[in-house]
Image (tube, rainbow, N blue to C red):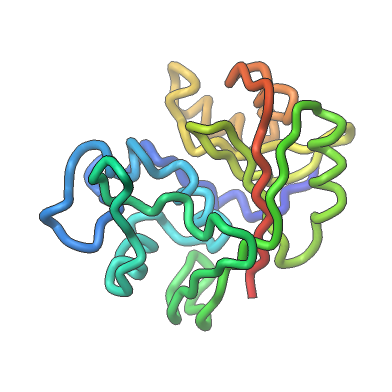
Amino acid sequence: MKNWYPTYYYESQCWYRMSFLVNQTNYICESNSIYQSGCHFSCMAMILGVNPAYLANLLAVKGYFSIDCTGLMWDQNKPSIKDEQISIVKHHNKDGFQNSKSIKLIDIYSSDSLTKLEGVIQKYHQKDIHIIIGTKTHSLLVAGETDNSFYVWDPNTEIEKNESKAISNNVNGIYDLDWVFKHYKAKVLEIWVYKVT
């Protein structure tokens, strides 16, 4: 097993029930908490090695969150259009102070098979390239490789009855790509490829 991220970068969206994806407090509601709507956002935070609440604060002051067609303000999985990027000002992560960074979406794929999914990940995995996969309702960070495949970090620690077990399974590479297809009953997985500069 090979981790692509330090294990202390792991974050669960379930730890942030009272943190919200909003620019102004008058938009706060249960549906736009990191806990309810922040799986993709938590994956972005893990890529940067920051906690999602801190990242939300950094981006809120820039007006990053927007209102969808239902009137709900949240991150809407941005950057979500190819070549779109977001900038994060100088910030502190778990390794110390970091210079400003940009996260750019460089490609989007769909995969209905494990073989194709593994092929896309293999094609793109390198320094400063990061991959998030998921269904229409949930996102997971591809976090490393095993002898035979790749594994993910799932920001939802409610996948197990015991949160400690879920965290251990995540950081120890138990949730592989085949598990994602089966657990989330996914016929097709979306693949978002990001570059950090």
